[in-house]
Length: 125
Length: 395
Image (cartoon, each protein chain N blue to C red):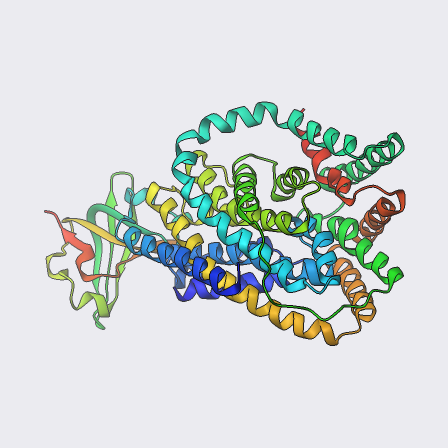
């Protein structure tokens, strides 16, 4: 087996791998967790959660901050300006139920869900 | 994709530098994980780690074959690789491990559905018979020496290296993260380098042309041994490779190197299968992945398989490219001087990573390693250093 044949075989394996990654990427669902279950151990993971909006704050620069809470606890959520301008933030109000998807990040030593896509926030009531 | 390429480059770094393993980078990444994960998605970091682990399994044969400076998973390639280097076929030696890596990764992927179906059963069977299987391998190795005197010597080498393994690995003499480095470098690397200094070899002109090698058996056995190493606790690539070596006894260096290349790459793949099916991480990379992806789903597992496969091509390009550079360089180098410089470098590195205790361990290991050719028995008996502690752990 010469170098060309080895490279050809490796190229085939890698191309199949890239194809598999392409197919799988659409299936890597965010982890669904209760607000109180989200911790720093989930940092970097995409998670979904649902609960009631509390402590809602619209920042003057266009960012939106609030907490999603249920009976067991809550988690801070941040929607930064670039996402907030295309997201349906108008439906947000204290006491309304929402479903939020985003990446868990650490903010001042605590976990926070940062929404990355405008469609990842939905008011359900 | 960019992080897979970055991971591949990191794998080159860990593979080429003796004493630096994927696990060292993983430890740093895990300790910095809050910072890293605030900038990158968990799948990006996972992709980086897996690509690094895969490329490492290809590249780490280069220092092992060209410098006699092995890591745990390339340790048995030192002697056949060195022989081929002295016959002007250093490039071919590395290429054979690459053939094994690529071929076995394809076989390993084809066997994944079977692994998914049978793993739980195989796992329990292996656990029950593991110490006896390892004891049988040692017995077989000793008996294969033929003469009673050589059998006695080889048993003594197994006992001495086994005692060293128990003291170093279970006795807490050294930091567990670095304990294997002085031990294996002494047994297989420094001892080879010192003996080669006595022989004063000249590195002949190296050829890069390919010779036809019947690689099929090596690929299949390498994949099978890697599968066992990936799935069964305490059976690492080196123990699996040792069984492989005995299967290839008398069949020449070429196909053995193909099998060795296959063991490491398949082990990386199957360690992720073990993580998915039983939540038991079997390698540094899979421990890191487990910490990042807390609940590994089937799709997460397929993602890992995809990254392993995608990393194969960069691994081959980098390994063959670096080996071509090494071949050009080594012909111009005064080999005894290179051996002396490598010996000093390894001793200094051992000192820096493990202190005076590490130097002492390396000196003891080197003495055992040097004793084997003087007594006329095979160096592979020194693998007692890993086999004996494993047997004792399971008994």
